[in-house]
Length: 457
Image (cartoon, rainbow, N blue to C red; front, side, top):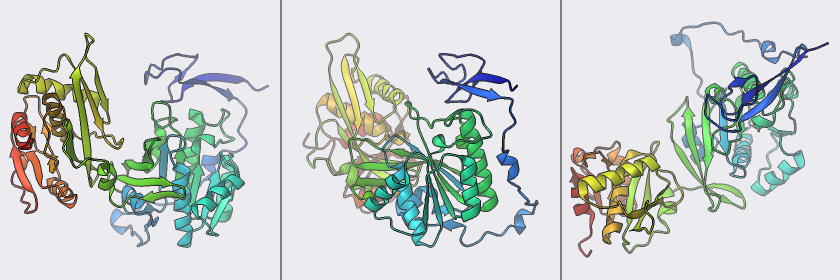
């Protein structure tokens, strides 16, 4: 008689325990342990061993790369974050919140690839074929090279891949797929690890592109073991504000291109549409009249410069401890900027509530936004305005000095294209020459405050 054992596994990091734990000692997450049952019964199929890799070692100088190593999706914003298109034999993981548009973008991509003559196998593990057909009709996807396969069993999926020999396989989603070689339920750490490993072997040996959808936890992390992100070639995060129509695809990992690239889309009734000029999207609600507490920065998302409006609100608090609220910027970074403003500029904010918000819902993590955040707070506290035709670029040090930033030429060109006339830049970037915008180099934070305030204020 077979013996049945059980273990408890953290769904965030894969830490194993003999019993249930409320808090994971490895990743410190709460309530993440699930029980997995193990049996001594020999599995019916040992799938990884069934995939034979007969490649032989060869010199790197002898390896030839074909001209069709990359395949364009004909979706420019998607190609941007992929590094120029899909690499044959690669695995792309797309993760995001429920309803953000993961299935939509992959169905549209499948339609574009099928229009180029590729054979697509779309494995839908969470919807029926009829439901997927309804979405395809709404999105205008009518190509005949797309095969819809509602299946959750990995061994059956593998058999269909061997039979159809598709060019691209879409897995929607990896958390709903299970393998018979693992006794635990679908979505567990063991199942995700095993299924992804088998799909990776299929992709590499048969030169098939795999597009995999992944769920996220309530903390925004990709559900399942961290090894899932290590196995795949590209990790793409689908971000966006559910109260607004635009969506952002952000490349978190890319073995074939730049990381931190961003693609901007707008969600409509007919699916996702590319946003050709994202600066219009982030600045379209900006008032042409200067308002205290606002500043325009130029931040880099991968190789793309974006103009974003920073808003700050400073007011007296009736409570002993003032509030600090940061939306779209790092909270620790905000506290550091407030400390520099108090110590180096003499701005007393110890009894003031400070709220900082990035318009459009985008998250700005780049240090070059420091100067824009500081100027928005300082102008709001003193009820003066920043010139509406000025962009702010610079990183602030703890002594109040302004540090240089990279890609200054690209940032200034983007500002000129958006109609700005003046740029506050770090003194170390003073050698940059631009005939269409006034360059004002500054060494310290107090100099930047004096330079950016408009004469009428």
